[in-house]
Image 1 (tube, rainbow, N blue to C red):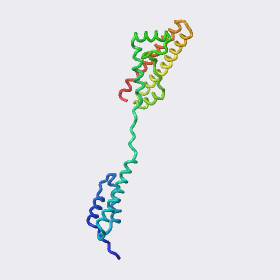
Image 2: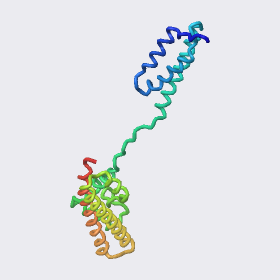
Image 3: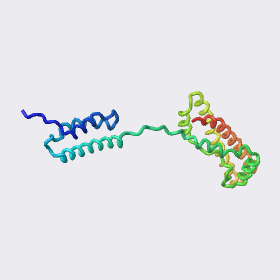
Image 4: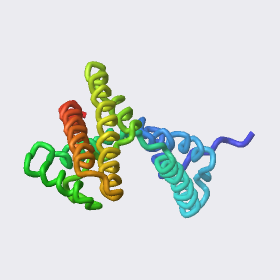
Length: 208
């Protein structure tokens, strides 16, 4: 029977180092590599160049496996913040309803039939699904009051925009000023209601 020939000294050292690799991702990949090298490293009679060439190729394969596992491993999921910006922006846009001069200007602009009132805008439309997304991020004691205010905002927003459209339509059709003014006054009241609903919701978003 042929005698088992010992590994060359340099190969023995490398195999020992690979076997003692730490329990990291790279280490766990390199440990099986040490067993592979123990079987493939040429005996002591082989040339040093042949042994080093085999060690280099095998080590490169192990490193490539480690790199591939890092590239293709899934990244940890990061929860996206709730979409609160439209709510904050709406509160800012409706700040004019608290200023009497701005309210009077808005009324005159609509009564004149102007197609736009500039920064004195009606409540912006916010989709119900957005409010539901925010609700899911709130603690239970805040979720109910938040959605109550959100529903009020949606209703007041619809009323304010519809009443402004009615006022402009009545103005174009030559309706009496009293009719137009009634639509505008009710539109302002609805805008004030929408702003109050936002004032209820926004403080709940500070820690979201």
